[in-house]
Each structure stands twice: as structure tokens, then as C-alpha cells.
Image (cartoon, rainbow, N blue to C red; front, side, top):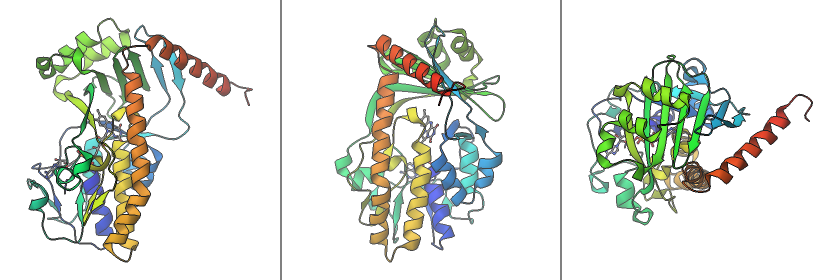
Amino acid sequence: MGGGIAGLATARGLLAGGWDVEVRERADGPPTSGWTLGMWPQALAALEELGLGDLVRTGSAVAAGGELRRPDGRVLVRVTPRTAVRLVERTALLAALADGLPDGVVRWGAPVAGAADLPAADVVVAADGVGSVLRRDLFPAVGRPRALGTIAVRGVAAGPATALAETWGPGRVFGTTARLDGRTNVYACFRSDLAGPAELASPKELLRRVYAGWHRGVVDTVEDLEEATLDARPLLDVRPPAHTSSGRTVLVGDAAHAMAPHLGRGACESLVDAVALARQLRGAPDVASALAAYDAERRRPAARLVRASRLVHDVSTARRLTGPRDLLLGAVGRVAAARRAPGAD
Ligand SMILES: Cc1cc2nc3c(=O)[nH]c(=O)nc-3n(C[C@H](O)[C@H](O)[C@H](O)COP(=O)(O)OP(=O)(O)OC[C@H]3O[C@@H](n4cnc5c(N)ncnc54)[C@H](O)[C@@H]3O)c2cc1C
């Protein structure tokens, strides 16, 4: 259940293996708006395995190098990625995952109330996101999603961004990436107490205030933001479960491992989960062995990313010791630049 990235990708993988699949999704149809997702090599390989290599080759932008700045504009670190990360629009990814699924596989407007509301099935894939009702009912030890103490705002600004650029200041981060349509993808993250509850209703005004006095790249981008594209929400993650399955129900995607977005890995791991689960269900002698093999393959790597994402979240939105942090980042940047310089070994 759940017709997001994890649910649709798992459905695709299972259908290719000859399974009968039904996806129950509470929304009435696919989303018509969304933001850009960074896709790491493991996720690109998963998309290839799902037969969506064309999306990777033609429907995405390459994330060229990036830079990290202080609020006064001084560059702390320039980054040249060693691996190819591509930028894909969430709506394009979801459309590609749904494309070609037989009619009736996805039941839109079909919410699942909880574990008592499940149909008879050999396997139930819980792909219902960070607020998963199946995780709540069948994996009570995991507990409720954990508030990270920050708010994320995403949106689109008019005009192009050529590279990934992030600026870190006390308790707040502002970042941009390129979009295929020539506009700029914007994300901001700041400590929750910087915003009054009523301010979330006017995210552009809120960003003007939170980032006032920062360098022109930030202030001008906030002005260029298109109001209709803005989304503001508190950030949550999920304590990694001790097991990814309970009886015939298995967790995938954010239901299993919602994480802070600071490493850009949540959707990527959802795709990797989907491909791994479908492969295990195709190859194992029975469902129980397939779910055990999926757990062995996916639970620990995903848990490591939940912890690493939380660490980067905490460091990037720290309020205190930002001076020593920035000095350290600057030193790392100089060492990396020296290593990249012509003649360096
Ligand atoms: C600010 C931000 C930036 C991010 N940037 C990146 C990035 O650059 N790269 C990256 O890899 N990841 C990124 N992520 C993470 C990524 O968005 C998620 O990891 C990904 O969407 C998880 O997909 P999912 O299918 O598991 O969950 P979801 O996308 O939440 O989908 C769950 C689906 O289940 C449905 N559902 C929920 N409950 C029910 C129910 N009871 N009955 C029926 N249906 C139900 C929902 O309607 C939804 O369609 C970011 C996240 C945030 C918040």
C-alpha cells in the first residue's frame, strides 16, 4: 500500500516477476507538482533495473560541482563529485514509475485505515511513508516519527542555477540546484523556533525574514521564488526498526527509514529497497525466506543512512560552534583543492 516512489517501484518490480499486484493509494491521483530529487548511482542502477533507464539518460540533469558558503558569501568548500548524481523531478519520476502499469493496479482514493483493513494477500508491502499506519500497528517498538526540530521549505525560483550551492549559517541552511526547465530548485532548512506557527502559511515572507542580511545569491533567490510552488513542513525521521517485516507485512521506503533530507538519499533508498524486495520475492523458495533475505540486504545500510543524515542535519543547522565548524570546513576545502590541483598526486 502507498503509491509513492517506494510503492510504485515495488509494484513495477513485482509485476515484472509475474506477481499479481494491487496498490492502494489514499490520494485521488498522481501529484501534479513537486520538487527536484538528487539521484545517487545506486538509485540510478535501480531505475535501470526497473526499465527506466531513459528517464535517467534524457529526463534528468547532471548535478555538476557545488560550493558551500558562509552567510557573508565567502566560499568555505568547493565540491567536485566523484560519482555522477542526477537531478530528477519528483513528478517525472512518479509518472515514469506508473507508466505502463496495467489498468486497475493502482487504486487511487483508496486509503488503508490500518492493519485490520488489509486484504487477503501473500505479501503486504507497507510503502505508506513517514507516517505509516502499518508501521504504527505492526511495529509498535519503532514508535512515532521523531521531530528533528527543524522546518524545511522547498520551492522553485525563476531563473537558472548552474550548480549546487549551499549556505550554512547559525541554525539555518539555504540551498539551490539546477532544474531541467531552466528554473532553480530551492530548499531551506532552519530551527523550528525561528518561525512562529502562523508564519508557515506565508513561507516566502518567512524566508525573507529568516535569511535577511545573507549574501545576494540567497536574498535575490528568495525574491525570485514562485509563491505557488512553496511547501513548508517540519522535518521528521524514523527510528530504524529491529526487523523490516512482521508476518507477511514488509516495510519499504520512508515507512522503514524516513531520514533527514540532508544527504538526499530517502527516495534513492526507496528505489533500492523496491528492487531488492522484488528480486528476493522472485528468487526465494517462499515468502518468509524472501523477507528474511531482504532484511539482511537492506536494514543495516538504510539504518546507517538514517544516522548519517541526522548527523549532517544537526551539524548544518547547529546554532553554536559555527565558527570552529566553518574553520574546519574551510581547511577540508583547501586540502581537497590542493589534491585536485594540477601536479598533485
Ligand atoms: C525537504 C526534502 C527534500 C528531499 N530531497 C531528497 C533528494 O534530493 N533525494 C532523495 O533521494 N530523497 C529526498 N527526499 C526524501 C524523499 O522525498 C522520500 O524519501 C521519498 O519520497 C519516500 O518515498 P515513499 O514512497 O517511501 O514515501 P512517500 O513519498 O511519502 O509516499 C507514500 C505514499 O503512501 C500514501 N499513503 C500514506 N498513508 C496511506 C494510507 N493510510 N493508505 C493509502 N495510502 C497512503 C501517500 O499518499 C503517498 O503517496 C527529500 C525529502 C524532503 C522532506
